[in-house]
Amino acid sequence: MKSHTKWAPLVVFILLGSALTYGLAKPDTRNIQSKMIGASVPSFTLPPATAGLPGLASSDLATGQPHLLNIFASWCIPCAAEAPQLKAIADAGVPVVGIAVRDRPEALARFLARNGNAFRAIGADDASQVQMAMGSSGVPESFVIDGKGRILNQVIGPINPQDVAGLVAAVKAAR
Amino acid sequence: MRRLILALALVAAPIWADSDLPPAPLADTQLPDPKQEAEAQALMETIRCLVCQGQSIADSNAELAGDMRAMVRQRIAAGEKPQAIRAWLIRRYGSWVTYDPPLDRVTWALWAAPILFVAAGLLVARSSFRRRRA
Image (cartoon, rainbow over all chains, first blue to last red; front, side, top):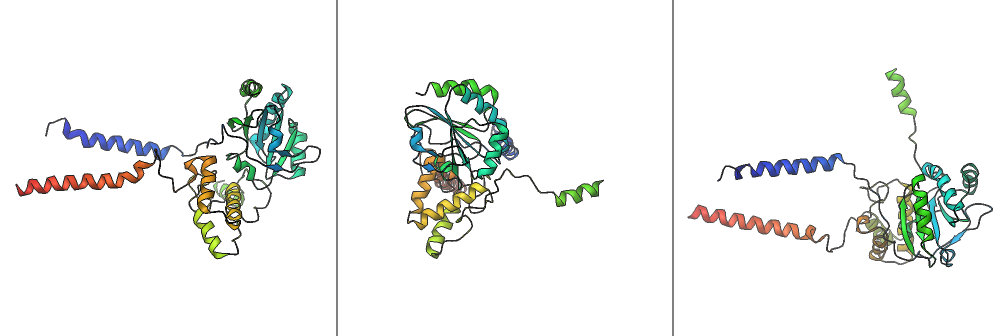
């Protein structure tokens, strides 16, 4: 055996050991991207989530006008942090519609009164069924939907102030 | 001070980012038909929770896992096949969501590896036995 090949097992051992240690130390939580991007919004009809705003159906998203669909909940703290950004997006002329996951009408009304209302319609998804149908795995998440009701893009987690301009442009380009 | 902190830790409730809606009707209730419930249970044990990644939806206390169990039981009760429900979830979340991943371009190595390792072992064994005889 040549002198340098006898070190090969040690090198392999060290490489394997470092890879396994790295894998153990790195927390294995990741965002699950929806595989529905590029597909049509699944068919659904949701009742109004709170008084004064209409509910939401998939047919509302195929009216020739692009939408930003926000999946949120009044009990979700990042959703409250995201509210001003949604308002800015709505004020820029983008129709923002919502799906409230496992929410109560009065809690949602308080949430909208406190954080501002960017929504034209909010559907109540009491058992997360539409959330699952969209391939969404948490709140908040936002989907860019084109005028034909096709899902173009997904934002996982809250929309930050620096994301607003990009999202407005993305929805406006989606006609 | 230390005792006080420990005492406080005992009574403190963790803050969950959870709703206050009760679980969906079928999240924690078995189906009346034992055969259907067994099918649903077997499927739930192989579907990965999207929140507590690493747990199956049968094991997880996350609300979304409860809603996923309710969805599985509803569909089984309506006569849908477990494989169809699994396919529905894979369509939305990718193969990541199942603990029983389909054989495809990415996963073939999982099935091939044991066979390759046994074959390699046989080759090593054969050559070493030969050497001994010689």
